[in-house]
Image 1: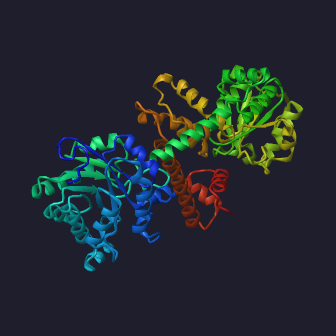
Image 2: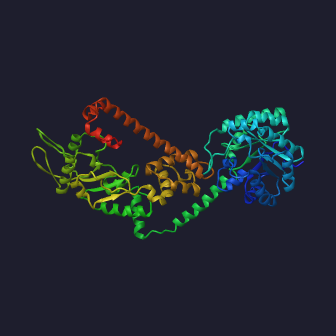
Image 3: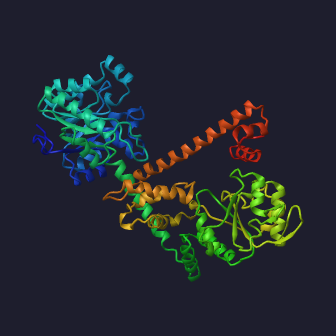
Length: 582
């Protein structure tokens, strides 16, 4: 009788590998695999298709499997190789299967493709036609009786009971296609669920046939830690890896290699002395990076920071490090200054009073513009303010003189304004609906903060800087494989540094002895997508609330604003932000 090494010794965990090429077979043998499965799913994976394609009529499963197994696998390995046999076809009689196994010298057979991996309805149809799991068990029983190895893919309690009653000595509990990787399935069952089911099935089979060896494959078990977790619940004799031993490691290995070469080419770039000086200057203010886009921005920012009287405009995307830019423009402010946001719903009168002050019976109460202490004012999205306010602001800044409303008193303007606009890097820095006089004042005095995706070369350094700024020791920061870093480089980073900071926080929970893989990073980025979805949901709720109020008040803006307890201007701004047309 043919045995894999140690198959008859309880306590030794067998490891089998489902392969689709000679190189995969050789590597598995060198890695210590006890036996191999030559199956069409392995070949399909080598073609770049997902394992599930092996269940589709893409190729003749029998011819495809025998061809590569006989030519590529058997001549190159010394461990037992089980041939995947398709028991659905007309040539799947046990005698024919035994003839093929003997002709090529395989150690035995495994039912693949099989009914276990079919949907329930298809399994029932195959059973009714006499070509379902019972036929697979009958064929494998004949293979085993001939002194060869027979491994049965088992998926249900009925399968387990029937296989046990047939006396099959190697039964593989399959929990579906593997999760993970570029062609893997999403995880549907937890490791705990798999462990409990495996324990029940193993007990059922051993109660019928104590000699049976129970192996595990598929589902959420994609690593040694996962297998150990399941094995702590269920008593197992072995594990068979398919995607987990060829596709996933291959993807990760090639991805890491190419990403490493790519990152090595990035390191060839050298900064000039002037660029190094700019980089250090930016770093002092919390702006990290040496990517070309960042160096160009720092050069512009430093030039504008040396102009003390002129108001300037900054365009940037959500989540960009505004405080650091403000600190660089106005070092004395340490990133802190009075801030007014025209998109925040402030009533036009309140906004005007804070900027220009107001006349009263006792005289004029000065605003921020005429405060003798000087300093800077941060004005965000001023294009959403009333045109009259924008025009008055432009004239006051241009003439450095403010004329009060009632008394027509002339007052000196001391403040410098930093206009901040929430803009995509693909848009012009100044919005189209900015008042022409204000646009003329700021023309030539604008800068655009490049989004993180345009300075992605700095990502590794930004991750370390973010961790350090949070008080984290760099030794505690989980490492990333080159492939994982490349995955992060392909991410859109729609919320820039704010999103990166959240990602670094999530990295701590995923840390361990091994560097984080691209699959782990995918999971962490998926958490960010959930946050974005939640934010989108909040916007949807606000939109429905406004639409409902408009409907109830006959689309009268004044009555709608009063019902929502906001000003008409705030209502207008929110409608515009949410894409509600007039």
